[in-house]
Amino acid sequence: MATGEKKPIPLEFEQPLAVLAQQIEALEVQLNDNPELEGDLERMQEQYRSLKRSLYTNLRPIDHLAIARHQQRPYTRDYLGHWDPNWIEMHGDRKGMDDAAMVCGLVQMDDLQVIVIGTQKGRAIKEKQQCNFGMPQPEGYRKALRLIKHAEKFGLPIVTLIDTPGAYPGLSAEEHNQAQAIAENLFELSAVTVPVVAAVTGEGGSGGALAIGVANRIIMLEHSVYSVISPEGCASILWRSNDKVSDACQAMKMTAREILNLGVIDEVVEEPLGGAHHDYAGAAANLKQALVKHLKELEDLGQKQGRDAIRRDRQNKFRLFGAHG
Image (cartoon, rainbow, N blue to C red):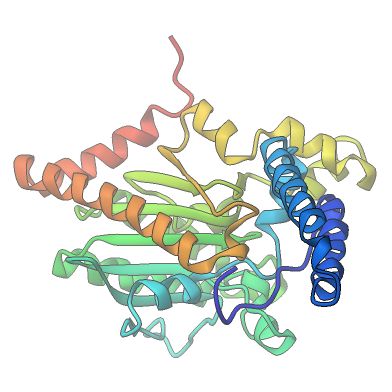
């Protein structure tokens, strides 16, 4: 766990680890008065490490979902703070609105200056409400669209960070043309001639995720998920039961490794053991390394074959989805 971050809250499947950790802490307190307990402490610590390795090697899809939704998981602002403490945020959709659920800015990543567009869920209750729990409204997608056009105009690569249960489905969003806002983003992202790399860092939910996910390269963090509907929604439609969420997770093939095997994404980025919320700096470093690698490959493609080759590369990628034979 990184310095300055809160101790991770254990998930349901992590309870055996949490119990063992408490026993280790109690033994460490006793060690000052009973040095002979040092051997017991070392054995228990080794047992903890072994259990942890075993636990995270055999995760079920619903366990990956729980990690992806963990309330302490790093969000867009956390990643940007690690990559570039001096990043410049850009606000507004040029129509008088701003959406805290969509964060946009100019970021320095090694020797690359990029436009980053990402969703933000918020942590404290007030911030969660301001960010609408990570569900962007139409003005959020229009802000993203403004930055997409800005990147195209000035030849800047685009990085998108996806962690949203989906676009906001409420009445206000429909009144402000949510579907049109998403459709315009899909259209514009498919046509830009600058490199676009999308990363699913938590939940990649439906059209709300796809609206900033039309990219030359799509990568996912190890414990992130990507799906056309939430498992709860799937269970309610197919089985008409909330008890079938685990079955829905299994059937939907929504985990990073499964989606990689389907050929929908290009890379799975390893997370620190236990999930990104255990080590923000480590997760940010791994993600940055993968993003920069793909951006530089696409920059090389543009230099060798012209910027239009980058657009063709992206369009061909999506045309091949679902192809067989």
